[in-house]
Image (cartoon, rainbow, N blue to C red; front, top):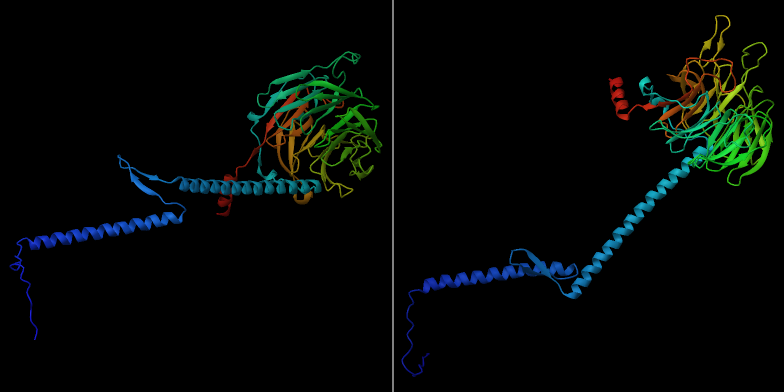
Length: 490
């Protein structure tokens, strides 16, 4: 049996029922909810802070008066952040450098591959199929020479043209404006000792691949070396015993090859102002010469009807026999008058029987010959082909050109494997086309014309004008090709 003991310290406390107990209970519940919410928010903030700490430093939020947020960090945290930024920057720079080096290596590899293909004669730009005939209104005639233009060259940057004439003068032209930039006047015969320049017909010229030197040769057996930029006279080379008929700088060097009517080839070092050696082999006057990047040159031997490749280092030569030329008259046997390299393995020649021939250094005979390439003239029954006086080739491509005195320049396409020549289109040019050159970019062709042939006065075209024709070469746009292909497909 249990009993209750009450401590007698006064009357027992009586707990009265509070009328606001329900409201107090609701208030307490509200306070408890607010505390829980704050606790949850605090937990959420702790989680965010924890994530930041895993990144290397903790940020404490602070709210500005304008409502924007800023972060306070300790000095140690700032050092860690800056160190991380610096490391990121170094990593980005190294990655960028690696990409650039990889790109440069790809470029170098591509360039080396092109050089190897060029050395083998296999580098070929297929541009002939894209060429379009130019409008006659776009062809520009530059006049400045008093007598027929005999030769010309284009500067490597395609900005200037140098031309020479039977009036013994040399003119430097600006291609874009067509203006004369400099003239080296010709002198009278017998004034060689006091006149700076040529005093006889200039027959040939060449410019170095870096555009530094210009070389010119004349009927007086002299070779003049000029500074191309200023047209300042530098040297005079003597030694040939006949008119200098061909000049060519070896590409990438200042080695100069010269050919003459004395049937010899001479090698010169322009930097040293020195003669190197003489080569013999042709049986008739040499009428043309060209060279590429190899230590060799090619020549046309006129009426000995041979083309020769001279290997300078090996001190040897390859002899290529031309096709049977058709005699023009009873006492003539024909002559190969001009030659031009297409690449290191192929070349093109023109002859006074009107033929244009395509050659390979691996074949002793022409790969292809187009007879009477520019047609025939004279009376019926006595018809003769137009002489081919000039040929040109767009380097390492399938495009070549030839010129005569039939008032046209003919463009040709070299077929697959250089097995044949296909006519593309002709360009109207009035006069004897004595010299032809493609620009390095292939954007234009320059023709040097005159009233007479560069080597003689067999005919005279009174209506022709002595000067230069700048012929723009248009190309079909790739978009047009695609559209045409779709139309053709439909």
